Image (cartoon, rainbow, N blue to C red; front, side, top):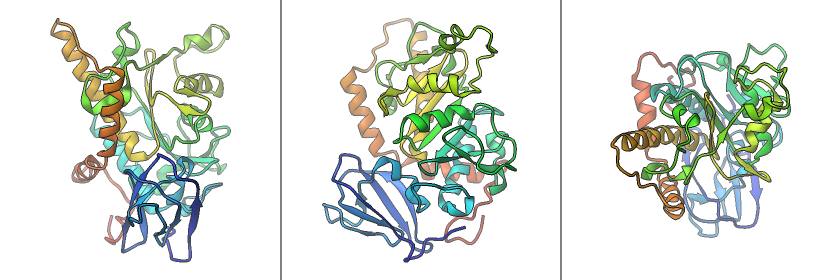
Length: 342
């Protein structure tokens, strides 16, 4: 499945910015892994790992947001076939589905996606995330209308419009999760906001917004009001709750009586945000149950803790990866790069 060769290079050039990412090269296959760090860059040639960062360090780069996961495939404009997608990313995607299940963020319902290009994204077929195992379980969709690129694609999730509308509205978003976490749902139907109170979840800010499907139903009273987001109209309204003018202000948005949508600029960070959103909800509910006053983070504390934990988000991924690998119910049939085995 599309191993990188030295001749297969993608050069990205842009003025230095504050966004920074760390890549590690898997020497046996020339694949790249994406993680968060700090520095700036001037140019990056993906594949051969020839770089000219302003720090002169061989490990630190800064990549325009829309290129982050796309760099894994060597294409920015259009990815329409799984053969164009790095096996590293495919394996990470399947592991991510399993991690969400292991952490009780999804059961038979809920889904993960990852952007492949400016026009397409990847999701699993209509299957419980824990059972996603092979390329046959994966479907590429058009961002424009959430329809599969291939007309003979297997059945997909009815709420895939959530993902397409988020990608359409926010070019920097590279991964999206829709979860029905039972730890989080109570905050979607209460006047008590979900707020950062645990240092691993500063990204939540001082109050996570709640999107209410009723805000759309009121203008369309004849529509099915089953709380599911199964069309562009509802999904577009939901996506607007994340931010404005193409910029995400809230990486997590709750859905009244339904669940949450979680976003990030990498697949790894999206899983991280999901897990620690749920843990923050658990901590907050426990603290509220004690009967005293709950001391939440200030805006500055939320910002600074979010920045710090974001820089260290690479640490748990290998642990979570090993945990799902050790569980016999989870199968990942994408070969581990360099291992020659599943």
